[in-house]
Length: 145
Image (cartoon, rainbow, N blue to C red; front, side, top):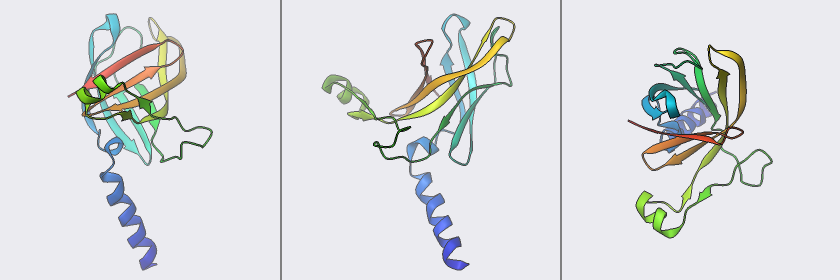
């Protein structure tokens, strides 16, 4: 029906104005002692997927590094994460007091791509950048272009 098509088109246009849906493409982040690595960010519906363009001795290239569920949620929903609140000094540096964050999953493995697992993660939007945190490992990587 015409009304449904128009609503779908308006939904897609609205998503394009949301920063979390404009991260597609190549990003570089420092993966600790493994050095700088590149990921390619793509979308499937409301899911962001970061695939390794360059790999390391733990998770090789071509494998998914992390995913994030970007489905809009209300902060009072069980699986929604409240934004990160910055101190005023940091807020002036980054141009925002509140940084949106989203539930995700991070790929981890022992050296040689053994004991492969997915762990709790969080994607955080930081101005023109983003970060991903592997929560149990207390490891965070910031990505830039």
